[in-house]
Length: 331
Image (cartoon, rainbow, N blue to C red):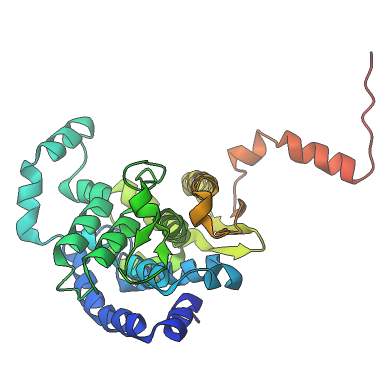
C-alpha cells in the first residue's frame, strides 16, 4: 500500500528519506526481540509499526500532508517505526525493573500483574528513553531530531499532550531543527497523528490464524485481547470519521470491543482538542479531518446489552424528524 507521507518526504528531501529507509531494516531486527519476553502479547513487531505508519498516511488528506515540512515528515515516520521499541527489554534488564520502587508499588496495586504487564504499561516511556540514549546507533541525523522523535513516539499513549512544559512548551511547539532553516516542527500535531494511528491497528492481522489456534494464551486478559483483535476487521477512515468494523459470537468479547470503540472515540475527541489549542502563529492551518468514530459491530447468536436495553435519544429524534413526523405536546 502506498504511504503518501514517505512519498512526500522522498520528493522534498532525499537525504532525510534515505536516512529513514536505511533505518528500517535495523529497527525491524531489533523489534523481533519483543517476543522473547512477551509471548502472550499481540503483535508488536515491525509489521505493527509499519501499519501505524500507513495509518498515519491514511488519516491525513493530501493537502494536510502537503502542509508538513520535510523535518515533520521525517520525525513523524521515525516515531511511528520506533514507538514500540520500549517493548524490547533485554532479559538481563528485567531483574532491574523488578527491583524498582515503581514496579513494587505497581505490584501492590495490581497483585496479579507480572513484570511483563508493567513493561507494557510503561513501554512508551521506555521507547522515549531508548531513542534518547541510542540515537547515534540509530544514526538519527542529530540530537535535536532525536529529541523530537522521542517526544512524538512517547505520545502514542497516555501522556498529556496539553502539558505546558513538555508538549505545549514554546520550544517544542516551535522546534527549530536546523539552525539555518526557517521551518518549525509542530510536535503536538504529530503526536496526535501517531496516537490515533496506533489506536487504529487492533485488527485480525495482528493475530494470524496459526498463532491464534496454537498459541492462544491462558491468561484471561490476554485471551480477551487476542480474541478482540481477532474479531476486528478494520478501523478505517471514511470521509470525516473512522469506521470500526468487527463481529463476534462472544458477548464478553463484544463488550471488550465496545469499550475499545469508546476509547478510540475519546482519543479522537482529545486529539481534536489538542489541535484546536495549537498556538495560532504556528498552526499553519494544520487540521485533521477525523471528528467521529462509528462502530459497525455484528453480534452473532446473542443480543448485546447495549442494543437490547438502551437507545440513542438523539438518533431517535433525528429519525422521526428526518421522515417528516411531528411530536404533539399536551399542555
